[in-house]
Length: 228
Picture 1: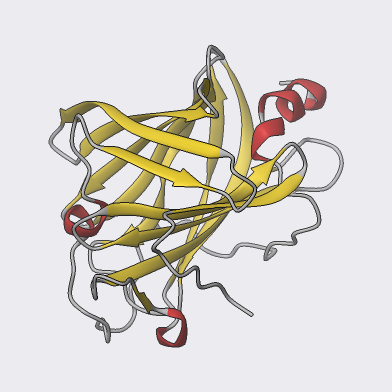
Picture 2 (picture 1 turned 180 degrees about the vertical axis):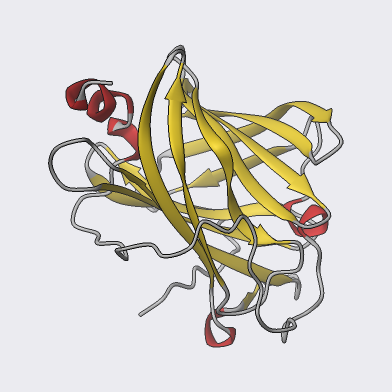
């Protein structure tokens, strides 16, 4: 795939000025060295995804993001949830997340109306029970139709000092994720996203790049917490 094409397809995921770790040394799908020290909440409970679920988030400036689970399909390995995103009333993106007993995975993503970008293999975002400070490395490819580009990534669970509780008193799990394109020529291109999930509720905060700027979309009652 030409570098320019890849950049255009991923333009809405770009978060300028944020560096990511390099190099990656592990291609493990799952790695959890220590037992969890935080509440033992499995991924299927804290992501709270099912067909028909809708999460509405907003920015301080008034921008609105509506995320809907429009399809759920159960396979032998995991349940696949397809989410659509509307930004200020207009179709924006789609993502497919896989949820299973052993973890949470990013399976594919796309701009609204654009080609689907499939991660091969799916990129793990968390183990089944998130362990504070745990990190998972990923090495694979981004596939768009018959074309592909090498990629790598990692996802890290916030350490215990950054676990939050919402006003409801439920624990909120934070995940830092970076997906990097590895073009044949030039430097790696990082696309960071940070997600916060409230147990039993689902997504309550999303930080990502929009039009070259970092934006926070959150439930108004959720106190945003981030790494210093």
